[in-house]
Image 1 (tube, rainbow, N blue to C red):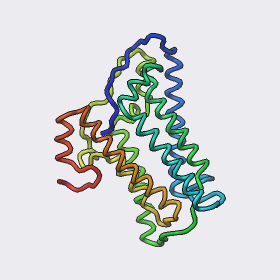
Image 2 (image 1 turned 60 degrees about the vertical axis):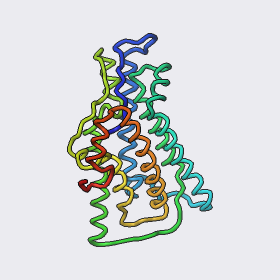
Image 3 (image 1 turned 45 degrees about the vertical axis):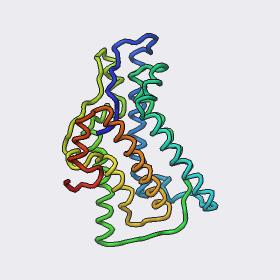
Image 4 (image 1 turned 45 degrees about the horizontal axis):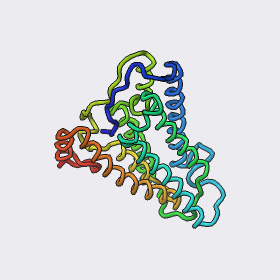
Length: 256
């Protein structure tokens, strides 16, 4: 379950933007997300797209590590701050509440685009497998992306990426965020979306140093972010979520 506070968006707001403009902003942010999402599959997997984790001119290793760490750190800071309910309540004092999630998605997209653009490859290979092992890892790689995508729909895909909020506002319908529910994958682990990312990051037939650095830093951030998000979810859903924590593991799909 994702921590997206269920504050209500009024049908009309003082000083609000035209409804068509709000909807256009939501559509733009969502379409950009789709492009970035598809590009990231090739960027991490190292195929099809022109720029991947391992492409580009190699410079000094120390400099590359600092740049890459800065790019991933920017993503982590943005996600940590903009996803908090207190920041959201502050932000909607200045922008229409219906655009808050779309703005979050847009900023995330821009940071990911900058990460792809400025990423510096690192020299070296940790492991390389072929044959059945390589096929198994490629399968896991795409299964991980499938888990990520399915998990967004189990939460409420169009709400998660802001399109639902702007559409409801444009059509004059009242909006409230998603309720706490357990569906399919969420009955197995509490955060299947993050599990899917972890599978994707580490399922590498060829684990280069660039891929290893990316996977290790992202894994560390995911574990920290989940600790923070769990506290937010307890605040939002109270005893229902505490009971959920007792019954279902965070990331490991093994029954308690």
